[in-house]
Image (cartoon, rainbow, N blue to C red; front, side, top):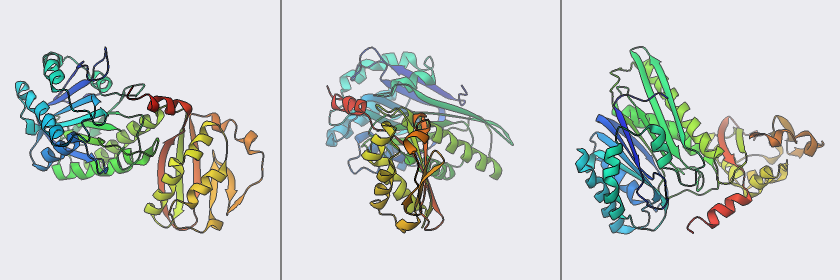
Length: 391
């Protein structure tokens, strides 16, 4: 694993919800870093989202990320904001100002933070700082995830080598315009702050904002990114293009892992839409298909039911001529120019629908717009997990 220079990690068990496992993580940069963030569009934004945005808007450099699982601190009012800030103030003993820390939380909505548990966990967190690995931190932020999600890159540029490290959590309550997911990216390149913010925003647009599990956008979703310059590698224009591509690739790989780990999921649906009036119209079409419970359950049942796909397209709000629409599954055209293609699709597509990833291509015949969305299937296990989440 490639670990960017100048970052240390800590993970410890605070007992917020989970027993016998770490649920509190801290990532510290040796020096102040340029920071960027993309946040949920849900109107009920959790306290850590609001506090993180405030700290970013101050315009100062950021030194640390503080992340907990098991308590969302969402819909908790002014008291929730105060308790969130209190947890940051507790890091004074680490030599960190609360304005240098970005918080992130995930867990049950509505419960106030147990600040007594935070205080009790601080000695363990301090002892773990520098002893824990990035993988330990990735495990600590998991909720219903079945595996930790972490990826690194080493990027060779004109002036030297820059490293990227990304970790995230998410398995359910996932839908674009951020989705319950948290993502964190660390970089040791020397970057311009404004460029870093715009680059992260674009990377998120085509990665974390291009996935769906269940159509739900949560209150706590965020992607936070730090670049501390500790590699000493300055970026020229070509280097910036390369680093942006690598950041996007890293985010896309992490986002794909979220869909792979969808609550109760058994396979991934890759929805490629082309021929829309514009990209926004293509996105509408892709999301309608990816969020359709009928399409998702058909995928789970290995049923090549094109009728559910075109019905979802028809209510998507995208503009197109139904007579110009074509749909293929696994490269097999099953609906062309508004009409079904005759064939034994149950038999012909049986092997395709058993794959871990099933590709659905949709051609709207209305222009040049295109979109790509990754979605999961929908199973009985998803219902069981979410029916029992609080109990």
